[in-house]
Structure formats: structure tokens, C-alpha cells
Image (cartoon, rainbow, N blue to C red; front, side, top):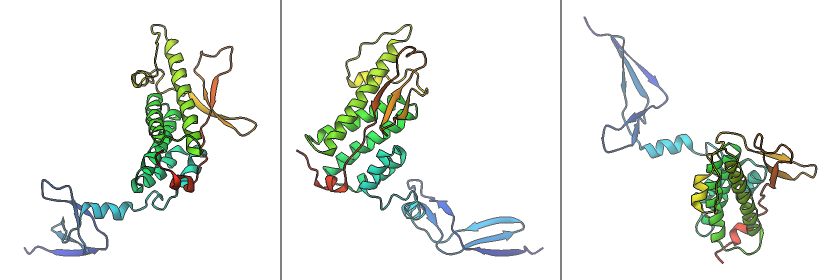
Length: 245
């Protein structure tokens, strides 16, 4: 009996993994996809190819809306505590920047990631990211201006998180820690009460926002400790003018 066949043309494209074992490229048909039905069995024929990179760029181009972002927008996101979105904007700027602006942007980016971790209950990650971000800010050798003020506020916040983590660790029944503020200290801390919401944001009547540390049972008679949330008062003009001092 003769085999009955029919062909359907589809207007879209589907990815196909390259048959070359040493290549990770994806190849795609650049002509309509032919689906042929032979005895109720579906066969797919793909003809032309293009690279995985082209495919990803086409699919993901400006998917998160950051392609044309500006530094001023990133600053706004940081100051409104949208740290995750701020990271996305700064990452786009960082990938395009040249030194020394690249180092500066990377430092601010890591600070944004640090606060995202902090309020996401990842205390260890918060200290590590803030510490690395602070190191990059210090590398710029600012001695005045908005980036210098930002650096000082980040330093105060990191000290606050460090000290409250030490206090939390010292309150455990079988452990008393003497820390020296070294990188090793940060690595040891952060696992205490991991996954618990130790830090949250509060805004006072004057509109000033604070990071508040509140561990259950730690402050029964005193007010929880707090520190002002760092803010960045810099513009694109400040960024463009920056250089190593």
C-alpha cells in the first residue's frame, strides 16, 4: 500500500542542537519549518543554520529593559531600595565601562547585591558582597564628594552588620567569638540564624530609612539596634569626572 503523506508549513523556527560534539552552537532553520506526516509519524526537517549566539541575542535582546539604562536611573533604584533592579542596571553599565569607572560601578553594584542578600536572609552573602564592594570603592582613593560619602556610609553599615552578627554568635549557649574584622571573620559569621529575618527596613517620621537588627529574645528591655540606610547622591556627571586619585 502506498504511503500517504502531507506537509505542513509553519512560520516559526525551532532550535536544534548541533551534531558536532565539540560545539555548543544551536542551529535553526531560516526557512519555513516542514512537518511531514508519514503514516501518522511526525518528521521534522530543518534546513539552514545560524549560531547559538545569534539566537540568544535575538531572543533575549533588551528583555529586562536595561539596554539603554543610565547611571542616574541606577542611582534612583539604589536609593529607593530596589536593589535587585539596581544590580541589573549597573551590570549593563559595568559591561560597557572602562577603567577606572568600571571598578567604581562594580563596587556600587556589589553593595546593591549585598543589601539584596541582607534583606533576603543571606547574612553571610551580604557581608561578603558589601566587603568586596567597599574594597573597590576604597581603591578609587576618594577623599571628598558623593562617592566618598557613599563609601563612608557603606563602611558604617558593614560594621553594623558585622557587630550584630558577632553579638548574635556570642549569645549562643556554646560559643563565644572574638573577631578581628578580618576576611576570615566574615567567612565564619553569617551562618548564625541563617534564613531568619534579622534585618528589616524602617522609616521614621522624618522620612529617614534605617536598617534595624532584631533577633528574637535578644532585646527584651532595650530598643533594637539600627543604622541609617546608605544613599548615593551622585549623578552621571560625577561618574564621568571620576578618576583614580
